[in-house]
Every structure is written in C-alpha cells, then in structure tokens.
Image (tube, rainbow, N blue to C red; front, side, top):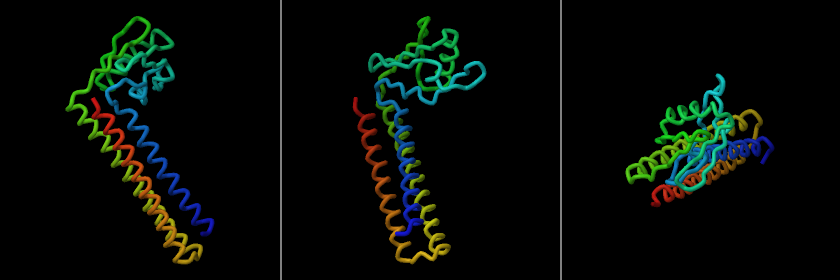
Length: 188
C-alpha cells in the first residue's frame, strides 16, 4: 500500500477509536446502582461568573456504594453546587452538612434500570452511526486518492476492505461494551 492509503486507513481507525472512547465515557455517566464520581462528570457550576466543571471547584469522593460526598474548596460554593446538582436533574437530592454535600444514591427500580438500558443502547447506536460515518468518509477519501494519485484500483479495493474490517471491529467493540454495561445495570 502507498503512504496515502496507509494514512487514510490510520486516520479512519483513529476516528473510529475516538467514537468508541466517547461511547465508553458516556456510559460512565449512566449509573448502575452504585455511586461513582463519574455521575457528576460534566456538571458545571457558576464559579464567580464562569461556568466551571464541578471537579475544579470541589473534591468528589465515594465513601461507600450508596453515597457521594462533594466537598467544595470554598464554603460559599456549597449553595451554588447544590443548585447546580438539582438543576442537572440527575435524580439526586443533596444534603447540606455545613462543609460538604452528601448525596444519597437511591437504589434503582426495575423501570429505572430498563430506562438506563435504553439510554445505553441509544448511546451505542450513536457511536455506531459515527463509526459508519467515518467509514463513508474514508471510502470517499479512497476514491479521491484513486483519481488524484493514480493509485491502482485493486489497491483501493484492498483499502476499502480494510476500512470495512476496521468498521466491523469497532462496531463489535461497541456491542461488547454495551452488553457489559447492560449486564451491570440489570444486576441487582
């Protein structure tokens, strides 16, 4: 294979891996019955007029599987963090303990577990769509290479086959990660 073909394939694999990584990161936000600091990941609070990630203004710890402790570095941030958590509609009701917020993670009901599985499946489908879009773009790039650089047709066919193989591999990875997450969510 020529350098251009290899570069096209490597870029496609890199973008597909990025989709898988993003999918895994999104799954961490879906709680599976036990407390985790990732449940509050992505939450932003108003820190003196600037929307700042919660992890940059407070320490988040999990002393046991049923609770999360958020300890702000500045006591005056307690009410701001409390409001941000409630506004995020995560289903949590933080308790103010003067110097920290205690969040009790309620056990999941069967209906809530099924909802979380649906959410995980939607995230998986979004990741698969992204991977397929990367495949389409890589195949278009391969066609451009054939025309612009006079690369032989059989090399382009080989490149397209390898792009399809990579697509299948990354979609299988998404399916496996989803199956693991579904099992984790449905385990009582």
